[in-house]
Length: 87
Image (cartoon, rainbow, N blue to C red):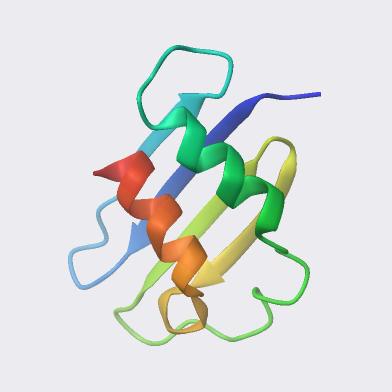
């Protein structure tokens, strides 16, 4: 089982892509909060919305559980994952 939390942001007006990841087996100070978020987030129903023009789309890989989510469908927990992983 993967122990990596990865986030990729694409789209937006400029079409730039940004990505980051955190290994949950590392001693990174973000790990405890990310572990809690990964155990509480359900990616099952968040990716159903269509992306808006010039909006961002986030690709999440939460320890092997993956989804692409347009920015308007982000939950508060997913927004926090983005803050922790992408800064």
